[in-house]
Amino acid sequence: MSGNGTPPDPVAGGSHCAEPTPRALFVLGASDPEMHAIERLLTEVHAPFMHAMVGGKRVYPANAYRARLPLQADSLRLCGTRIYLVECVDPAPPGVRRIDHHRPGDPGYAHPPVTYWQASSIGQTVAVLREEGLATIAITPEMRMTAAADHCLGAAYRGDCPGVEPDALLRWHVASRAAFERRSAEDVLADIAATQRTLRQAPRVMLNDDCKTADVRHARVPELLLAAASAGQCCLSAVVARDGRTKIGCLVGSPAQIAAFMQEWAPAHGLVDVYGDPLRGFAGAYVPRQAAGRGAAQLTAARET
Image (cartoon, rainbow, N blue to C red):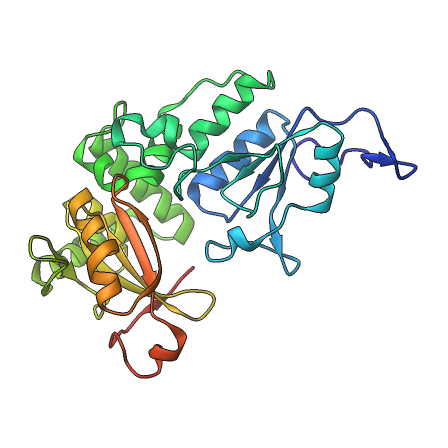
């Protein structure tokens, strides 16, 4: 348990709930910039949280929904604590609420850019903290940029997210990447510019009869997501996921491009476990393990972090 310290054992004598038990507990999924911001926020307001685990390790994107509710969280649930799953755990036990926007049925799924804040996981977390009476949060520009960048990055760079200015978003992104990678902002900008040149020169792939995209699966493309989003260029990418499978991404697409990838291009190329959200502008799918060795997609891929 983190955030508000370790609570007392919720089950005293095997049958009775110890007092006090927390009003709410957040179970956090894989680490990414938005999840890091959520964790920092919960720590600042002393709201208790714990991490979803698989095999004794914190989950990562590919296995976050394979996690089960931690035993301590389940005990607290039975004692009346409200449990909030932030982008993790499936199935969810009765009475547990989700804070998520990745899959059909999630509170923030299929929300357009104009409602990015309410749809984002950090926006939902702020709403829950208010609802539970745990904290009243002043929404900062950085929180809005974090939400917009996670929920609908391409739309944010098009200026479609209220309260998020594209030039400010790029400055914030570059500074964040430079700090994370421990290099200069100038180096990050140079990589973005080089990748944008690659995107302009890349071959185009037809996703269906009406939609095409740049194909940089074989190219060296540092800072691809930032480069594609700030240039407004949909593209196909390839990375090796932590489970060893090759993941094909369709990034920064229009709703029509993302739908074409999910419904037509990916199935036609034998990809599996297709996911995405046309309104958020992203999708992905995996090369089957049995096909990878036969060069089904002829991919060179970076390793996923």
